[in-house]
Length: 603
Image (cartoon, rainbow, N blue to C red):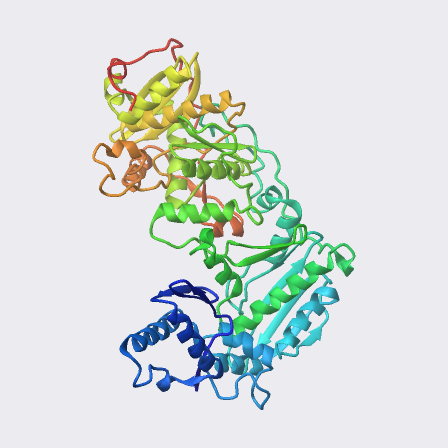
């Protein structure tokens, strides 16, 4: 076996040495202009191939030259710029690939000879017709893999299959629409795979139409007593769009699809199949990992556009996000849910919405809020999903969040039927977060609000913010101050959104069950305190708090979601109906500023 320099490796002289770059990495060696002359001699040897045992500094070289040569060789090995090939590789011969295929494998494969053995030993089939199938067949034939052609359902759909001598077959599906195309990741029987029909539906009709296919139909009888965060009874559900049948492939016959799109999608699908058979990294996953925003994202679906000609890579929900940290899982879920090309809701963005004092984000018609932009984006996306669910169903970023929301809504709904003790203003106003959002609401937005906090049971407190006899927001939390803080945050967000010309519909209730970013154990600067990062830490005792609420109200039942929504990690529950409608509670209209707040700081 011979060691060669990969064909994609190139070098450039620098004033003090040389810069060497490969497909995925590069290095710079400094030490003088003589390094370039040393490189010129070494590269000639490596172009023809050198036995691995002989790739060392020759005896008799001056010590500085020998060290420089050893340094360059070590860097080439470290950056995977050397590859081992058999003698005669790249030349015509029995059992050897064509020259162009050999150069490709030599550039990208860890073991080119083994990769060619796998490629040449598999049987290939192209199922489809028209320009898309022809482009894929040409790409496979150019790689030395001549496929059998089989008829397909439509000219805009493609299925490529490779069957190795041992092991399961590998399949890649692709398709073209009038303005876009896609190539799915390689899959084997029994492994999760994206649904081509759902991807076509999403590319054709946008995110909202796909969301309606993933939510259950509403009950025939509206769930009584389900209330919105503002305190009003939720309106009766409207019939949701039924799940459509598989969308017919657009562009049948190729009349409306640009020729370049057929070629791009067909070639990309063949490339993914060949890499999977050869044991090489998937090109879409590899390209995503090289982009700064795509590191570690595990993207899987390639989307191609004709105007302008572009290729992008996107995640598709085929399993719950991995990771131990709830916030990391929620962030991964949000990327899938709000993906600009394949997401099920519009990308949640701040846009022109104000970000002080509350962060606001819009997801289509839904408006979300939070103490930071990422929390606001998550809240907006969840609120958009909730708007498509039947009344009485709530959705959370995970099971703990959804269950916490359901129990909180049940406690709020049944508050009039539960025993309660009023909490003095001095107790809830001592909470720094409650003071902050009280001042934001009453001073910055001049809302004549009043806060009423009731301790329903040990470790369960209900807070309601009202003005002029109308409930602005509510919250149920373990501590009186925390409940007041969440309710005041929601009321402040509503006032801020209204000032910006937006109104909340039926958003997800902000609560301590939601995943939030966790700050470092030690504050970065001495003057920061844990209250600066509120609501971080409020989720820590959530399971114990839910047990306390379940002793007061019936527990919620899991609600079905479509397979795509469930695969993102979302969870939904149904709030059980109330035994009887809760009685109305009169609230004084006069503003009331607690003494503890008047004496405290804004923070």
